[in-house]
Amino acid sequence: MFNTRVSVQQVEESAELAPKFDSEGLMPCVTTHADTGEVLMLGYMNQQALKMTIETKEAHYWSRSRQQLWRKGSSSGLVQKVIEMRIDDQDAVWLRVQVLGQGASCHVGYCSCFYREINLPSGQLIFREKEKVFDPAVVYGDAPNPTQL
Image (tube, rainbow, N blue to C red; front, side, top):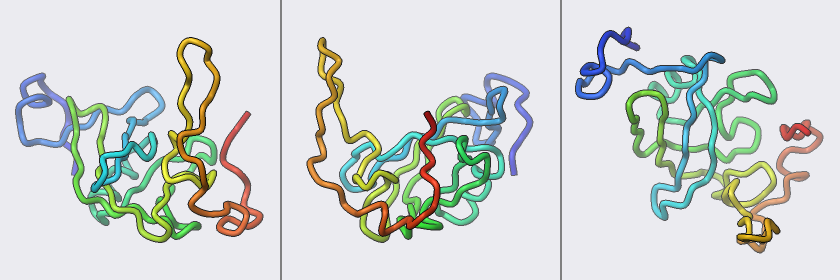
């Protein structure tokens, strides 16, 4: 499915998909809501996640905390249906998605993973999403929290 990178022209100007993954085998993926444009999350894809996303039209990521392929919504029901998928110079991906289920993408229960603003210059965090869309304890039960300290 992926072509070998052979030239700048191929990577920047051709119709050939020749993705570049970093030294960990990953590529960043920005995911936004297809209707509102709101940034929902930043995830990472390995070759398998990119391939599965293309084939299924559902967002797949590589979970760095769990060290495994992850179909978004497999445990929560918050599936991300891909409406559009873009790539830059083939080292980062942008997904525009519709979120099934309760319409949220954050495991903490908010719509977006970017639910807080950093106040400048104080550095204080300000909650921009005032209410959670769902209760993570109900949705995930006793599954381990993927956030690592």
